[in-house]
Amino acid sequence: MTKYLYCAIRIQKKFCLPYLKELFKETSTAITLVIPAGEKSKTTNQAEIIWQKLIEYGATRQSLLINLGGGMITDIGAFVATLFKRGMPYIHIPTTLLAMTDAAIGGKNAVNILSYKNQAGTFSFPVCTYVDTEFLKTLSENELKNGFAEMLKHGIIYDKNYFMQLAGNGNFTSEDAIRSSVEIKNEIVKKDKYDRTERKILNFGHTIGHAVESMMAAGGNEISHGVAVAAGMICESYMAVSKKMLSQEEFSIIESAIRKYFSFNFTFTYDGIEKFLWADKKNTSGQLKFSLPEKTGKCSYDISVEKSLVINAINKFSIPEISNAG
Ligand SMILES: NC(=O)c1ccc[n+]([C@@H]2O[C@H](COP(=O)([O-])OP(=O)(O)OC[C@H]3O[C@@H](n4cnc5c(N)ncnc54)[C@H](O)[C@@H]3O)[C@@H](O)[C@H]2O)c1
Ligand SMILES: [Zn+2]
Image (cartoon, rainbow, N blue to C red; front, side, top):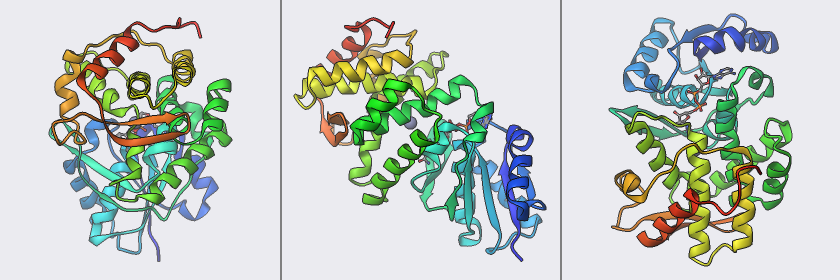
């Protein structure tokens, strides 16, 4: 008989689990594994604890692990399931907007090692991913914005109509918007499951975004991933203008849409983010490489950008043409 096991954190146990057990009655007797919330739990130590529990509970390769949570849970849950007895089936039930539109889609999973993110992981796919907007009701505005930034990214790199609609109405928790993002990410992943070519366009906004996020964290001023990616998308769109890929007009539309929803109470310099930029695994050959939009709805990857243009783009972000008033 199949054994159902829910892997979750406490908040999901409280808010989400009763709803799910009612919805999927066959899981009403599922065993629940609760792990501490936060990125600090996405480790091999925590994975080992889950494996030990799975063995204690008598889980087999016929059992089903249900990963109920944000991207932290879907990442470690998929990692654990993929390696447990050389692979047990798992389902993702994402409970954050970021996990619904990004982390739970695409078959990548990983855990962090030392202070480095996603250092050990695999590519593997869940039996299915169940997306339910009900879970968003308890999510904070900040967490919602983390998902929204990724959704705007999906529009900019792949679907102009979706971007214009989402930027226009800001209705990022609607089922239609979430479905569009899931479909876009899925389509991109299908073309390049193992992230060697086309999938790299999903990095748009993230080269600068990750560097700014790391720099701020190193200085003790953590900013959220969504805000960092939003800043990164403005900078990288301007690099695309400098490289004569994106028109100034399209840049202005992208910039004003992002500034309408995201405010930035920080600035940064090239010198400040330089070492974090070079730590990026894409920058292998002594050149900074970016995924940049050619126009809204189309993106290229592996574009080398000269240092002077990166500096220009950072200046452009710090002194915007438009006001924040949107
Ligand atoms: N595998 C991938 O392709 C991929 C892609 C993007 C991000 N990620 C990973 O995803 C993680 C970030 O995901 P995240 O932003 O979902 O963070 P998270 O899983 O840490 O969740 C963020 C916060 O939201 C809370 N939360 C979750 N669901 C809730 C709900 N329904 N109501 C109230 N609170 C809730 C959690 O307790 C947590 O404090 C990172 O580890 C990142 O590396 C993976
Ligand atoms: Zn991201």
